[in-house]
Image 1 (tube, rainbow, N blue to C red):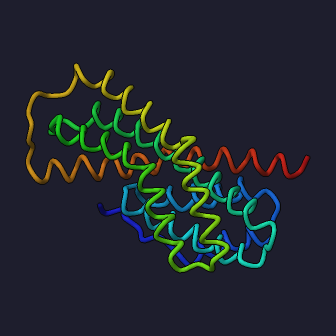
Image 2: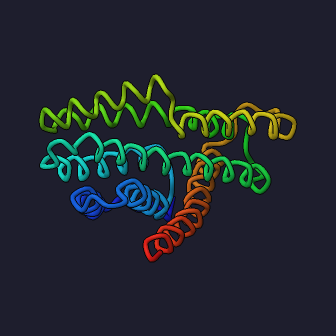
Image 3: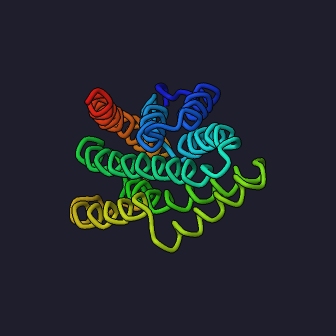
Length: 220
């Protein structure tokens, strides 16, 4: 992946901490920061995990002095991340469809793996949140734990979007994929890189559009 870039975690943490401390439009601010970080360079599960962690670590620090407002602040943070992750699932779906049409030397296994990865996004979200709570204060930890439990029971945008995306991909690509089960290592890497970079490009367009809409609302 020649275009691969590391996440600037300190920049992300500072941006989300500031958003939560400011306390205005937390959800949209967190969404925009998350989308921007996810769309830079490439998009894969490793990067998604890094971004979720950085966003939540910054937001948790910003929420520590919120007192009675900590729950609302963190609920808005979780909602903003959920929305951004749902958009990333949409971008990955489009990237997989585009890759299936352009990459010639691939196997059904390669693209199916990419599609199946979408189904892990919600649990990756929950798992990373639970991991971050280990280093937060008692109030933040309890609040985030409660928010994860609630989200697991009621469902998330990223969970629904991912599930719908995989259903659509299976329907669309089921009759077009090659029957081969394995491709060469280079071909597999090519498919993975193509999807990761294409998804980031799609997501960048989504992020720019949403950020533009947020700025218009701020001015009104």
